[in-house]
Amino acid sequence: MTVYQATASAPVNIACIKYWGKRDTKLILPTNSSLSVTLDQDHLRSTTTSRADPSFQKDRLWLNGDEEEIKDGGRMATCIKEMKALRRQLEDKDPSLPKISGYPVHICSRNNFPTAAGLASSASGFAALVASLAALYQLPTDASRLSLIARQGSGSACRSLFGGFVAWQMGERPDGSDSYAVQVAPREHWPDIHALICVVSDDKKGTSSTSGMQRTVETSTLLQHRIKHVVPERMRAISEAILARDFDAFARITMQDSNQFHAVALDTDPPIFYMNDVSRAIIALIVEYNRVAIANGGKLRAAYTYDAGPNAVIYAPKENIKEIVELIVKYFPQADAFKDPFGVFDGKGVT
Ligand code: 2P0
Image (cartoon, rainbow, N blue to C red; front, side, top):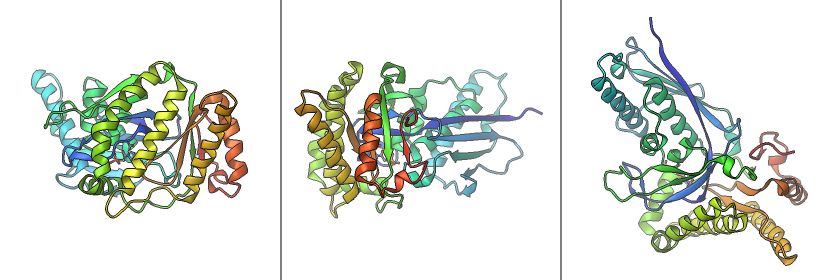
């Protein structure tokens, strides 16, 4: 008997130009384009196995060992349905293919990073789900095509289908067919950039991204300025900086965009605070580190960015990572991040 089963994994990504706001909540169409770096470290990934079998009663899902309900019409059900539809198209074209699109699937997904790292797992999780179903169904692996489906699981997931530097183009069409991810440059284009993750707190965040961003869309006037007058130019400029390997421009735009994302969260009614005092103290440290470099005739040496939580991600050229870790340990000797061997990561491991 043939076993129809496939496994795939996908990594976490961290945005430099932030996605925050949907113009269509069902299709997950964003109010602005975004751009991220996919972290290529082995231990920041979701790995998913999918199996199709005619003896299964229904589609089922296990996350980190616990079964989760697949809600009718929910994001998970939509992704599975869309992937089955792609398989059905292949089967209709080629009658010699086994008709597995009609079989229920069992899906088992695991993250190999501790939840305590405070990293969003929905991006890597939905990207790995879509990649494993694409392998199970032997679909042509056009990552942009698959990103259209991962997007409907979680917006940021569409970017995790590519490595390196990745843009999610917001698109214009109401059906979402032009809202997908493209690779701006592969990781090898700029291997010198590393990401250092500083775990400030492993508490679960108070406001989920999904509900927080909708409140921002409904109440923030600053968001309207951001999406019309700021992000389009930043997308162009940061793509150019990446292609030119211009760290100074990359760092400046990344920090400005993190700041504006948190300003937009604050402009929401009621306001949303994702950073805490330690987050802000790390910003001050990086600002000072950069100020000294510039005062000595140099350029920016590090860029901070914060997502929907208090943990810092610091992008820097490899040669600066050791110095930055030493600075953070010096000023934050109590930081939990440094007690936990999993608390601090960079692109290749801190040496
Ligand atoms: C980003 N974030 O670009 C931004 C920055 C959080 C802050 O994408 O509702 O979990 O599932 O589409 O993808 C978080 O949003 O939200 C996010 P849904 P998602 O990485």
